[in-house]
Image (cartoon, rainbow, N blue to C red):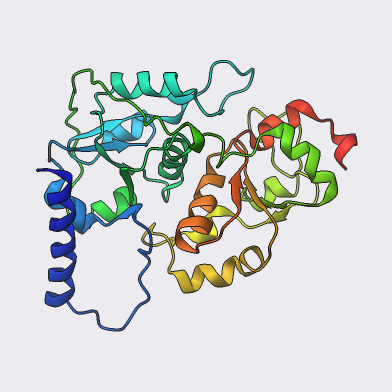
Length: 303
C-alpha cells in the first residue's frame, strides 16, 4: 500500500468511526498535529510493508509484550559515544546506521510508541525531526491504548538490513536543540523561560539520578512535571483545553522557552506538547539537560 493510499484510508477510517460511534458528549479533540496516530488508525495497517513500527520500551518490557511487527530500540542504543556522559543526541551517520541495522526502510512511515506515556516516543521523534525527518507519528496512548483493541505479542520479527537515509535538510539540524554554550551565555540575562520538566523532588534538589554530579536545578527555572500532560488512566496526551490551563504561563509570553529534564528525554514530551498540541512557537529542548549542566558548572556558581 502506498503512503498516499494509507493517508486516504486513515481519513476514511476516522470518518466511519465518527459516523458509526457518535460520542456521548462533545469533546475537544486531542489530535491537532500530524504527528499523532490513534490505535484505531494503526490497527488495520500495522503489518503494511510501507510502515515501520518502532517500540521504544526497555528490552525486557519488549520481550514481555509488544505490538505485532514492531522493532525494539532502546534509548541507550542511540547515545552519542563522543561525549563523556550519556544521553546526547546521536550524530546523523550514527543514527542512520542504527536504523539501517534495525531494518527501517528508506522513506518509511515510522510509528513510535512506548509504555511510559510517550516520553520515549517523543524523544526519538525529536531526534528524527532534528535531522529533518517528517514521515512519522506517535501512537497516542502507547501500549496501553493498543491493548484496548488488540493483544500484545512476544513474537520477535527480524528485519533485513535496510538502506535507510535521513533527508538532506541540513538546515533543520540544531534548530530544535539548545546547546550549553548558547544557554550559558544567555541565561544570565534572564532571556529564556527555563522549564524544568522533572519530578518535584528533582527540581527541589531532594533527588539525584544517576549521571548528574549534584542535585538542584538550572537558575531561574520554572517547574511543570512532564507527566502533568498525561492522562494517568489512559496514558494519552490530555485534551488541549486541559493543557492550556497547565501551561498557561508558558504559552502566554514572548520569551524563548527552553525545556529540560535529567538527560533530555522527558523534556521532549513537553516540547511536543507545547509545539504540536498547543502551537507554541520559539521553543527549544536542551538536549544535555541537567546531566550536562552539572558536568560544566559547580553548585556554588549557580546558587
